[in-house]
Image (spheres, rainbow, N blue to C red):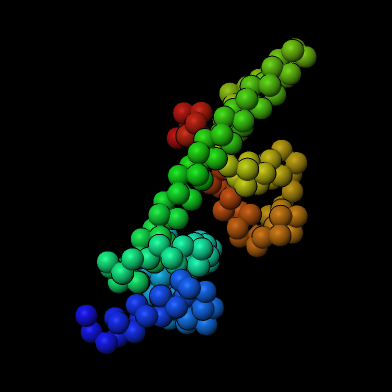
Length: 180
């Protein structure tokens, strides 16, 4: 063990015993390393920032569990990776629930439509599969007749973005309806 490793182990020991300065120094020294790692893992600086913050908290709560069998930075990377994987799994589950809720809402909407003897068309069915951003753009342009500048202003986006969302939405509808 070299003198740097020994000094870091001593700092960890002090932090585990309640020395807030030692803990702060450890976390500050490794923060950038963990953040850069997480940016590469997540490919999203915002998610990386959120995850590194959660990692720092977890390290603070569990500093007494660090046993020195690996580098302190490796211990932190392990914690960061587990937090990220847990978040990814949770988000996947949440998205599954949201899809289920959305499907149920569409079924209810269709039933209400048909119970009033109104026709549920293939176009309406295809519209349910567009993202909300694309569905709104298509509706505002082709059902309500707004121009791209107006749509952009309504949605707080550039008119070019409104135009591209509308075009993409129409392409998806045509594909859904077999008109490609």
